[in-house]
Length: 77
Image (cartoon, rainbow, N blue to C red; front, side, top):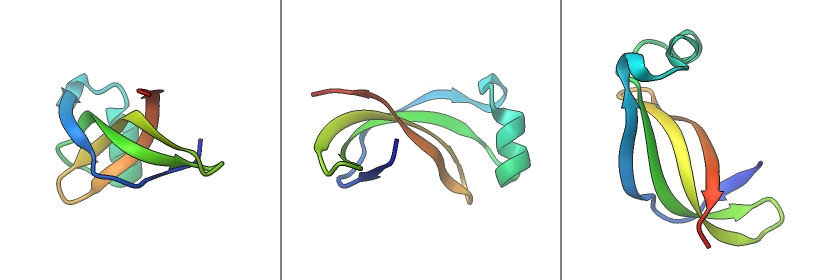
C-alpha cells in the first residue's frame, strides 16, 4: 500500500531489538550492520487515493542507517 506520512509520528515504542527481530539477517544483508530495532507509532498518513487517516505504523530503524520498511499495521479511526 502506497502512502505518505504527513504528520509527526507520536507514541513511539520499541517492539523488539537485536536478536529478537525475526528479519535481522535480511536487514543486515540489505542495509548493513547496525543496532536494529523494530518500532511502532501513530501518525497521520495520506493514502494513494488521497484520503487522510490516522494509522499505527511499524518500521525498522538503526543508528546511522535510518528508518526502513515503514508499513501500516492498522487504521485507528
